[in-house]
Image (cartoon, rainbow, N blue to C red; front, side, top):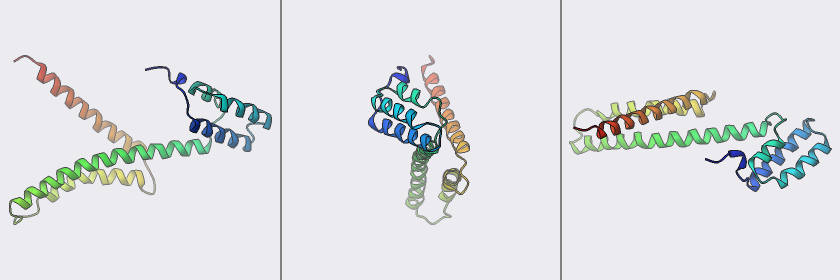
Length: 163
């Protein structure tokens, strides 16, 4: 992959930079002269490296932090929805089997539903609840992903062994 600093930026990236620079000027971190100079360079910037250089000596603005948090939550929401789809699929199959068998016994799919959906409900509460704990949800999802990759690796290695 190429160097990220050589990637080209879009107009939206330049506008975000201008908003950040404006916030820094209003906070007193930049004089009006420095702001004007950086503003001109911001609109001429064409690569990620040029954009990053204009804000390298400035702390992250609250708007930047907020955008990063919103992006992070959106990514977690997407990942949780993907896992919910898998859990719902398994639950629907079990309920269908129970219904096809006559639906006369105890509702045993409740155990499958509980086992598959409880971790998702817990993670959703951690993301959208009153005290978000994004790190623990990311760690949980990363662990699940790594275990899934390890299982796939073992299966593929097992298939390649001569018999």
